[in-house]
Image 1 (cartoon, protein in one colour):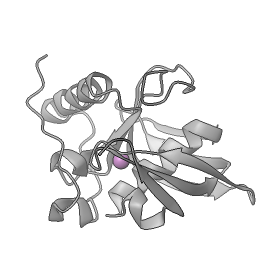
Image 2 (cartoon, rainbow, N blue to C red):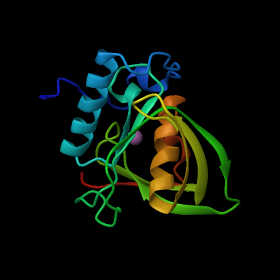
Image 3 (cartoon, rainbow, N blue to C red):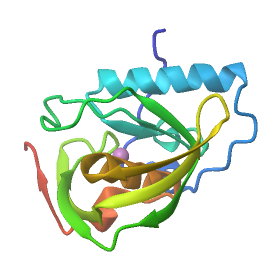
Length: 165
Ligand code: NI
């Protein structure tokens, strides 16, 4: 499918709006949207995206970790759609790491995140899933969950840098 989605960038008010819960998990429009989100994530060399980044106020995120020029050390995994994701527990340990965001092009920042998170979400079939995520994938989850609450990584960054001027 050719994606018609456009990623909103820092300054767009939609990025600051909390997203709304999804109630109908299996409708075709939502399923097509999930496919389009996965496609734009991979084609943008992202490792995750959240629905508000393309202007849609759904509590939906994609985690699609894979090594690429933006994140050479990212673990390889199948893209997964998480609907109405929730953080239900976390490690005491925090780790600092470098993040970027498709909505904040050309900027990286050091952000402190929980090393391990216990999460719950509905998969795209509407089945409740529980998982434990660690390290980089846990970081992606926390970054994308922030998007669903109108928060961007630059709000949390301890320091940031530009990739080019
Ligand atoms: Ni982001």
